[in-house]
Image (cartoon, rainbow over the protein chains, first blue to last red):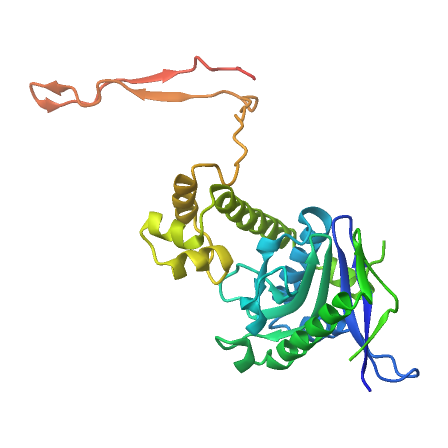
Length: 170
Length: 132
């Protein structure tokens, strides 16, 4: 069985960034999904600048603006559902022309943002692009986290997610 | 507060201009969307008012399009409120690097019976040794 851990990635004054990590084995440490994203694309000279821009935006969110709803785009089929009924998978909205990367995330509140993995958006639809695997996984993570909130395994307190257990089983 | 060590390494290499660009861009996106909410307008309504396609306005507000000063000016007029503020201060110049010399061409094109004649050149040193 795959186990998914929801854990704090970074803390800032105006927003706490969470991430998810697959727990494969007690002896094998798997980097978080967000860590894998940053390490993979920062090592590629073609995307180094884009990663810097994404991080600059995350820093501005964390230090100044919070996870303002206008900075995120809904992604996937769930995008058509009323906002209050489902937490929707999103991506960080960078209004830079032809921005090549997408970092998928789940905005819980202005103070809480869950970051996932991402990829290269080289097609009109994420499902048809190189980011499709990260996109599909992000959709799955969102459903699991949403279910955990509905079933009260998780709850929000200020800028933190608290839960009866820190590990969410996939 | 918890920080990620790898992100900290990246942060050291982010150019200042990237940070400034991202800040301004983020502020504008939030400001425009908040003004729309304040007026109770949808993007479609804004597009109609501006005589543009909703898809074009969506690109302005949600991505795939860099703002230009002209597009921001149009948005500002339509939304009726300032979108961004540029610091507008008066810069004082000090004249402390020697004499200031000004050459004035007086009646340069004064016609004469022989046609046009170049007038005397007047050297004006009235600003000599001025300092702010």
